[in-house]
Image: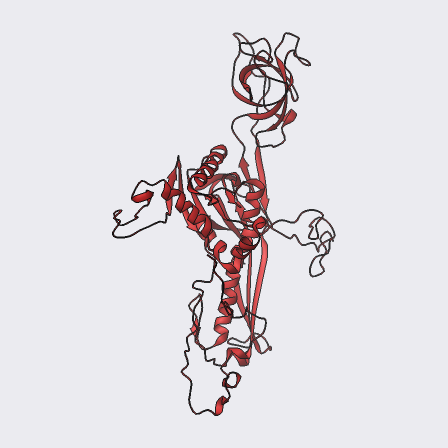
Length: 498
């Protein structure tokens, strides 16, 4: 079934930079009698609200918190994994070469850790560690005899060599599971020092502006306007100013979802003298502008998980895809409570998946909140569910469903489509560089610039001749400004659906 728009669907023009005469009644524009006609038309003064709630902000308020900052950047640290597991290569399956003797066993060359972070000679495997060596042929337990940089000599339990144990000269996984020492021997000869990862982000300054002449501010229109903030009346500038502020408020959230940091060598390059809008050249002494910030989607793509799961093929396939998501959560920390913000298609696919698993009613259909009475109501929607040891709370993501925002891109260009995001609930413990101690904070929170003298979370001010006169210019100018960034802690626990 195809749904086609009418010829004049969404025919109201987008906002423009100037005040238009079409905002005020003019009978000559549409009739032949003009103002000379003796009969007044039946005017419906109230402006029809045909798009419902037009704003999309509120997502970050649901999943995070807001906190002030007084620096040009925010730095935080995240703990590393507790246990030692590495990607490695079996260099020798028969004889120990290098640091040990020729009594048999095998040799491993340690590569990156399991998160593909650089390890090599910096690994933490030590002499007398007991390790698992795993390949497709099986798993072997071994004792570490000697270590020389990335070269680790091992002796398998129960076998003369790794070859006898079925290990081949190929890639493998190595996991330290303990240690073993003989009687009367010395202890460790090296310490395993924990490592942490440090991340940073910087705020961006956002501005907007609205202007109306003093004459138009005093002119009464024929349309009674209303806005998202409750403003109403026959003064068109009330609506225009309110719409500008509402749109700016949405931009404050949309920017923190979509923003990216510039890449070295690109046209916006904070490290080179590249051309920048406005003529500012980064790198020039005292004039460089540090552009860009890391938004939510960019942070998850860089440090989190990306999936195409729950694609709506069929309920059984979707369940298997969803279980793959759970398996990845097991790999990353197993945060039990998670919030899913998804577009309409993904939301319906999840509902269908869950309904197919429900034993109530004919064909596994749930009758919802009315005591599961088939004659009273049919509820095919699910807002919360549990799978395995995880609880999920599902909500529609208006930013992904509104045609004037991300939905247009998702519908037209699948390569750049984003279908949803899974965000862990609760808080995490992080080390705060400024306070010098561990703090409990939400995984996701907004930092805005503020001090005792200046609060730049959401600034607005009026200049001009309208109302309280502040200048000789016969206009009212409404200014809006914010300076903020997003902190995504523990991005490895987030999931982006593309």
